[in-house]
Amino acid sequence: MTEQELAFTQDELDEIERIKAKFPTNKAATLRVLWVAQEKYGHVKPEVQNLVADTLDLPRSHVHGVASFYTQYYKEETGTYVLDVCTCLSCQVCGGYDILHHLEDELGIKAGETTEDGMFTIQEVECLGACGYAPMLQVTNGVYANNLTKEKVDKLIENL
Amino acid sequence: MVEDWKSYEPLIIPDIPNLHRIEVYEEHDGYRAFRRILDNPEEWSRTNVTNEVKAANIRGRGGAGFNAGLKWSFMPQPDERPRYLACNGDESEPGTFKDRNIFEFNPHLFIEGALIAAYAMSVDVIYVYIRGEYIDWVRIFEKAVEEAYEKGYLGEDILGTGIDIEMYTTYGAGAYICGEETGMLESLEGKRGYPRIKPPFPAQKGLWGNPTTINNIETLANVPLVINNGADWYQSIGAEDHNGPVLYGISGHVNKPGVYEYPAGMPVEDLIYDVAGGIRGNKELKALIPGGTSTPVLRADQLEGVSMDSNSLRDAGSMMGTAGMVVLDEDTDMVDLLWRITHFFHHESCGQCTPCREGTGWLEKVLLKIKNGEGEIKDLDLLLDMTTQMEGRTICALADAAAWPVRHTINRFRDEFEERCKKSVHAVA
Ligand SMILES: NC(=O)C1=CN([C@@H]2O[C@H](COP(=O)(O)OP(=O)(O)OC[C@H]3O[C@@H](n4cnc5c(N)ncnc54)[C@H](O)[C@@H]3O)[C@@H](O)[C@H]2O)C=CC1
Ligand SMILES: Cc1cc2nc3c(=O)[nH]c(=O)nc-3n(C[C@H](O)[C@H](O)[C@H](O)COP(=O)(O)O)c2cc1C
Ligand code: SF4
Ligand code: FES
Image 1 (tube, chains in turn red, purple):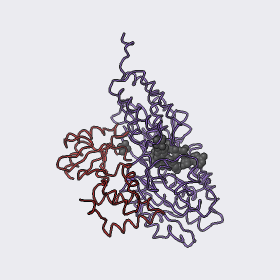
Image 2 (cartoon, protein in one colour):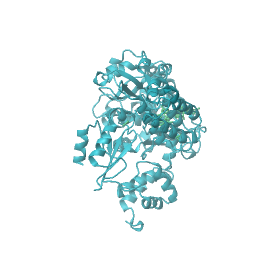
Image 3 (cartoon, chains in turn orange, yellow):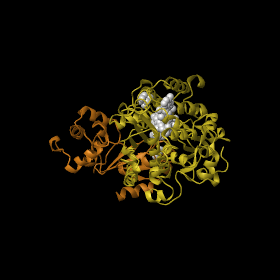
Image 4 (cartoon, each protein chain N blue to C red):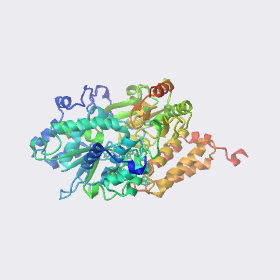
């Protein structure tokens, strides 16, 4: 899609107005509007960041700075499903790396890569606040899959 | 130390089905504390509420253990500026997973606590900042907020008193540093989460330069309990100088990991062996990280008679932190563990301060070398030396939090680290 073709719908613009109303400045809405954009396009590549900046009437450099700081924003296109495997403290000691390596083997890619068919991206991430359900992963910034075993991981990929 | 904990009935997360729904919460005396204050504004003046909470000694559950009421008292007298309460639901300290239980199981207790805090400090707007990964819990919580608005507990002219308080929920997008209170303020302002230099403290200069207080979600959930039952009652729960209910998040090598509510001051061994069902596979306990990654690890032989409160843990050589306990069994590789911890801090350093940005990177690099069997004994001393160069020299406490585990893990498991190092040329010769 070219930059000219990017635009928010009226519904999305209404949503953006509701977000702006929570804060005394437009700038404060930056993170939330980046989320709206990511939900729509599946990523916030530079041209999407520009759309956010222009919609909020903010310097484009500001929005680029914010987008690059936060890890949940996808600055590049990803697979349809992003598998965020936690290997941090509690997950590490409960087999988080085994889960990660199993996934890498099954999908034939390394963490940070996307499968050729564009279905899956694997990422290794820091603690997701589910340490009591370790090892675990999160699917595309959404659902948590807890207490993983290799079998559970296989089933998860099959069902996605 | 608490001994009679077996009869303890949870107060923050009681076992009541559907408590997250406002009708159920109200049936169980929900919003009674807030109503009581509004109905008796003389008895419960803003100052009296603050003093009661201060006397109760609610130690901040975000990890630093600061007395909540005392912090509220730092807010300046109201002037023409807007005033804010920013609630910290960023919960990113590895080993910590408790606040989400409040969002899920008892959100109104927290909302009521935040309302009481807002009343006490004459706050106009409450922001609730939740980590972006918790989007499902954000949605659950937003429903509770909606209900509270519908019932007139939030918004304009609350319950006909003429008091206006708004509550806005928002969320992050992945960055541990946004849990540091001033990093969170920057993020709320829509910027990168770069912590600010303190002083000025947020009470003087917080959100958009206006008076702001930051409290953790669990801290605020304790407030209605204090108003309903009094500071003396609250003081009587738990340990001396560290009291009240605590959500213990227990993870790692235990049979029954999870979040458990018990008084502060619980015996560590009871938590591990009774509450969390003991070590998996009947293995031996090797060590415990008592309150999230940044709190120093304790060897099993350092845990005898230790309880989960700030005094006991300090004497043992650690800290309470977030009470996110990571239990480690005999097979745990402490070198691998420490390397992964430093990887975390390096990844999460915001990069503003040289000792932190460079220090965390070097810690990770040297530990990777040792992990791969290519380190030398002198690298261990280099690591220890680096920790002293990082500590206390930065804008926020992340650098300290990165330095402490390195120092204490190496000192407390020195043999294991030395064994992993190459024998020096001299030793071989
Ligand atoms: N919950 C979590 O996920 C995490 C928690 N932590 C915890 O955070 C702790 C460090 O937090 P900090 O906020 O840096 O601790 P701190 O000790 O600097 O501050 C604690 C609170 O007291 C206030 N305060 C302290 N001195 C004050 C004064 N003189 N005047 C006015 N207000 C004052 C601060 O503003 C802050 O709200 C660590 O001990 C760690 O356990 C760290 C990482 C993550
Ligand atoms: C690097 C860093 C990360 C932090 N992350 C959190 C967090 O995720 N949640 C939290 O409540 N406090 C966190 N804190 C502590 C806050 O700065 C602050 O002390 C706390 O939110 C105050 O609330 P309390 O007094 O009610 O505990 C963090 C501190 C540091 C230094
Ligand atoms: S200590 Fe580290 S995380 Fe904190 S402000 Fe400095 S560079 Fe950023
Ligand atoms: S360490 Fe994996 S969720 Fe906390």
